[in-house]
Image (cartoon, rainbow, N blue to C red; front, top):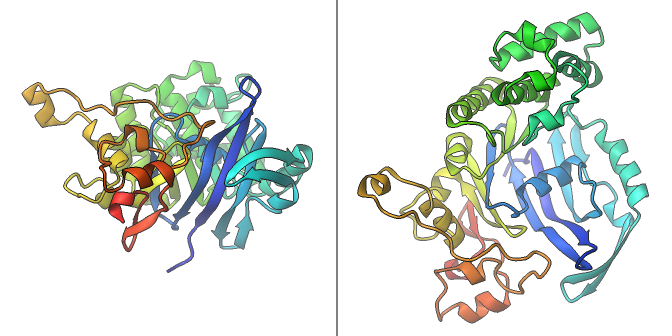
Amino acid sequence: MSTPHLKIDNLHTYFYSKQRQAFIHSVNGVSLNVMKGETLGIVGESGSGKSVTMLSLMGLINATPGVLKGSVKLYTENGELDLLPDLHNYVDLRKDGNKITAVKKDIRGWNKRHQKVMKNIWSKEISMIFQNPKAAFNPFETIGKQITESILLHTDIKNPKEAKEKALYWLEKVKIDSPTLRYENYPYGLSGGMSQRAMVAMALASEPSLLIADEPTTGLDATIQSKIVDLLEELKESLGVTLILISHDISVISRLSDKIAVMYAGNVLEHGPADSILDKTSTQRHPYTRALLNSIPSKENVQEGGYLMSIEGEVPDTIMVPAGCRFYERCQAKDESVRIKCAEENPPLTPITEDHFSRCWKNK
């Protein structure tokens, strides 16, 4: 097997709730590989850990204690880059069985170490498109100035005039209306769709090898959503960039993804090729994946006036992580043959086929 572009291994990111005096297990043992040039779509309900996983590898987690365990490696033309270097030297964990009961972390020392490493990786190797582009931009600087500064900081271009020309090139590349005019606009002067295009331009301006798009169509109307997806699809093909796409919208995921990871309660429940994950005729898909796909409105459902399928119950509290399968309480597929095992033991992520993995006792 060839070397992946990005390798995430057993990542744990926790936050501490002062109100409840307990740890929130936001990311709880996530492992994923992304190959060079492919698009990995990550789907799941709110609170499943999708965004926190990406923010963890980007070094953008501000709440404490943050990343506690795991390894994230980026493989580039310059060799292997460790995105969580020497993490074990800054963290001391106390456990009761598999449960972390206490954490001692040198937050200041870790942040200093991590930022020293990431300053050469941010934008140069990895860029991120955020959910709310207007909040991500500096409201007191023009769009053009911010993109130009990114180019000057993270590329070999050091001439301001040349950097401005490059910024205009990228604004034109993302098909923003009147690039020269928009270059001089402040963020508040752009519509939602324009803001998202400007964010894509800034993310790509430093020509990273890996692009993370976190809910890039959130808050946009259907027409603009479709245009943003078209734009990402076109840029992916023309630039050959590796893309990680986070979305609640499975239709967006299905249009762009080569592979899909389904997350729930801080775990990856299933991942594999997009056509295999999205195959509604398959009997081996994880019950949660099946439930997500069945909840999508279909042409037949609308014509027949049928009800939309829903997933009964609530996403589990990630403070009180269940001992067994994370999806146990809401699962409609469990039966007497696996009920006890599902309740008591979290299934490992095991292969259904060579490149399709599922975390379900019924698929064993």
